[in-house]
Length: 332
Image (tube, rainbow, N blue to C red; front, side):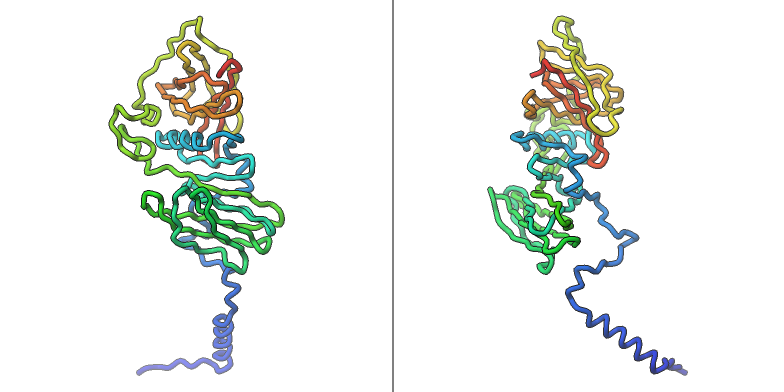
């Protein structure tokens, strides 16, 4: 026998009225509603960086310095396993440059000011979603074969995100995801990206993933363990010990040198470290411009194929970056 459960009439009308109010809610509140978390996660799984706060722990690229050289050096260290995460770079004009796919950038914006998002050269955007027009002004343009988005919030204190699906110059799919947040005054003028092309860490492969013959490979691109063995046999008449070391940021103990010696005849610098982990190496001249140098690790000895004015040793990821700065006033 089937039993029918009847609800009190007043209670039934109350439930129906509640459902009607929810169903007829205005569509304009959709952007302010937060979906339930998935598997206990209510925030993006990837690490996030706010573009207005990253200047405190990023690597600054000096004015006029070729950014491609700095990015290429970071890519080499990442391919060799020296860095667990590619670093975030900043420029004096307020531009923030993040590694695509490594972190989720949150673009700091403010009403009355446009911030630009610059995609990679030759990238072809296929679709853009997010940033509802009721809250954000989004304009699309192109400059120097780079797709550019110009974004401005209509109000302060709002949050959103944009996701761009695009095709790379080589026909591969790309996804750009950018968080958006607005403030009353603070804003980031520009946000751009760099990326490592299909990194393959093996002999005969470079950082772009294009396999080449062993004799055509740049030794500095190979895994450090494969590099040629170098012993610091330096004639005393050619030795230069006039190096100073300063911990620029972070915990520098793993990269604090025990000794630094240069061979002015062979133009080599040998850095004795306390560990065998290879740091990322950035060399600069007296003008502050970056120098392309190769380096290799042999045990605890780091050999740099130059005697520059300054050598920066870096290790860690974007959130726990350590930088040891070595300076030689007689360097080039």
